[in-house]
Amino acid sequence: MLLLSEGIPYRKIQEVLDTTAATISRWKERFRAHGMAGLIEERHPGQQTSVRTPKLQARILAAIKNGPNDGSTHWSCRKLASRFGVSKDTVQRRFVPIKIEDQLDVQAMHRVRERLLAQRTSLVNQLSENALHPPIVSPLSI
Image (cartoon, rainbow, N blue to C red; front, side, top):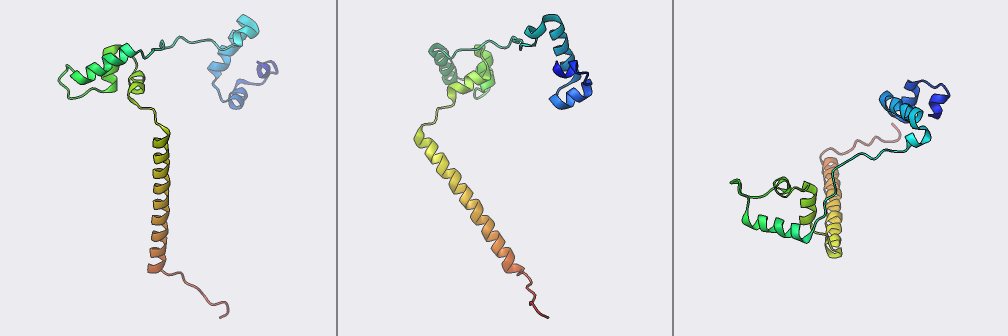
């Protein structure tokens, strides 16, 4: 609003704030209609939060044990979510185990091992490249 009040054109404001002309117009109209209160971020209605209850978890586990009724061989997160009226993320959070410290240590060890192997492979490739095509060294004085 300060930039607009100083007479700075929309295009310059768009560049400075990395936004669109439509957004600038919307903020301008909010400010005209409601003053500073109009600039407070409006809450947008989104999807209601779903709570993973033990009852829901038990129902999901029972469905997994029984298998899907549509003839497919296994459940997907999306199929389970649509069956129980929850988001796929809710289903995924239920079945992604929380990693304990020992598992995190093993993962870290594997990452270090992979990095060391990659460095060693790169070094061996460089050495074999130099062995096949030795660098040309010219004497200092000719």
